[in-house]
Length: 64
Image (cartoon, rainbow, N blue to C red; front, side, top):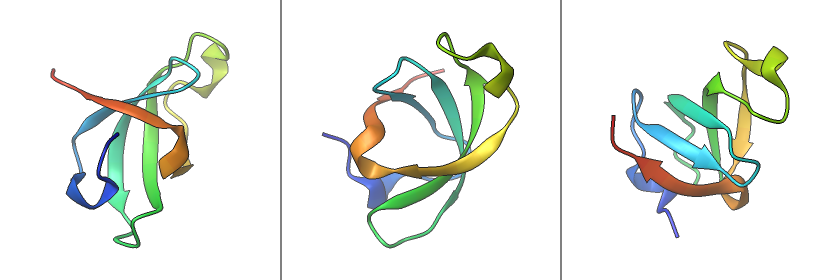
């Protein structure tokens, strides 16, 4: 499990749906981070888009 408090802008995370996202901002509430989609196998149109991501969706941090 990923500790959301530890995520910083620029970190890359993988979501349950297989998407890779870059952390844009940590809301520092332990539940939400703003992310930018780097890749989204289930919906390629999301690439480059930003949205809030809930902690439950985060599977792991990814080394780049």
